Amino acid sequence: MKEKLLLPLAALAAAVVLSLTGCGGSTGDGSSSESSSAGSSSSNGGIVHYGTLVGTVSDTDGTNKLADVTIEVGGRSVKTNGQGYFVLDRLPENGETVVKLSKEGYVETAEVVAIHEGVSTQIDVFMRQAQAPVAIDASAGGTVSSGAASVEIGGGDLVDADGNAYHGTAHVSLTPFDPTTEAGRKAFPGEFKGVRQDGSVEPLVSYGFVDVTVTDGSNRKLQLRSGAEATLRIPIPSSLQGDAPSSMPLWWFNTEDGKWYEVGTLTRKGNVYEGKIPHFSIYNSDVGYSRSFVSGRFVDCQTGQPIVCGQIHIVGISPRNCWESGETCTASDGRFERIPVDANSVFKLWGTRSGISSTPQTLNALPAGQTMDIGDVCINNPRARITLTWNAEPDDLDAHLTFDGTNGREMVYFGHSEANDGSARLNTDDMDGYGPEIITIYALHDGINRYSVHQYSGQGTIGTSGARLNMVIDKNGNGLTDIYALQPDGLSGFTGIKDVWFGWDIYVDNGRVTKVETLDTVGHNIDAGDTSAFSPAR
Image (tube, rainbow, N blue to C red; front, side, top):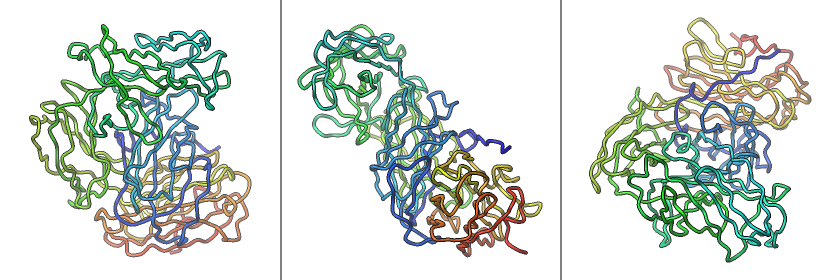
């Protein structure tokens, strides 16, 4: 029996938002089931021009990866596999791409990421399990509490999705979050900044947030009728109660554009903030902060080359630990400029790309208005990432990478998930259709590095699977990447189990890629562990 592979994300890096970047191109997509189709690659096996998104979804304690989470981007959707991974490709360049996430029993959320041509962006998202719903009579209204949080809904104030009055049993789920805890901060949707009523954008410090979701007996969402308001009370975390002001702005989160919007004012009553809400959503008690700024450069530790479109993460430590800031895409010279931080605070900063994180730095912010240049932040930059996605059948396709290792020809696949020297890793092995399977290459070996796909089990063939390959590769170790795409469309000769689809040969000399050769050929009756059969002829 095939052994299931499950590598924790910590094996990749402890980071929140991750990516493999550079300048090049791409077009493809998939992960778990794809709800809408996308066009095929314009150059089968060659360089294409789009961006890709790779990610994982976990619960807020980070120990359990969540399967069957629906990921929506630009009208397309996929689901996470059994190990919490997903891949979406063929994404157009967009510096503010909204990624919406939903799963039954969990609070819906959204993230904003930068998608760039030739870049594989990786994100790590955390979702909080929703509180069990409490039933109320919609005609009479009622108050539902969860700890110190509560929402008070008036009788006759609920409507269905078509705006019709609803008078049956309503199910109210009220889920409070404490942003001063790691779990609460991880679950914070979008970014720690909001749009004021005058249209200006302000970085925020959260004093607590609450999700309010109301449904009917068929789990269809209900809303407040036009002109009605509910009363919401948001608990103030114990560590913030000493300096919590008497009032502060109230914000709601829009999952469609991934932004927070100012919608009213909260008044402090004891250790909660109370205010009126015009609809059900996630609501947040936030204030702006006095800002200083951080600048620097993100580079490869070995070569000093700039990290293009990498991410910089900043998290508050003291006196307030309930804010984040950062940069979603560093410039072509690796620079990040004037990232706002809470003035005179202590914060932690690190950079990420492709699941690799720099060593976090703990820094002291300057007084308001001043800018601190921290110099270079560095990581050991991965050289390539190859993703495989397909349809429901065959249920088990496997990614294989062979190369000349220190002790002869070596293969990374489900039976040997990491290279002996750590230079490559199979991040996830999917066995129930759709994928993804992901191989990340941290160092390219001289000689021929061959990537192939093996049909381990299932109905149908690789040729009928709808398989798609995307390879993001930094050929010269200079931080600039290309995306190659390959599909078996029109390729004949597949028969089923033990077939191999030979994808690419990557020729490497002195650490530099001299040629990427598209093979797009078929092999038969090959055992999964037969390294020589997956290798070029000698």
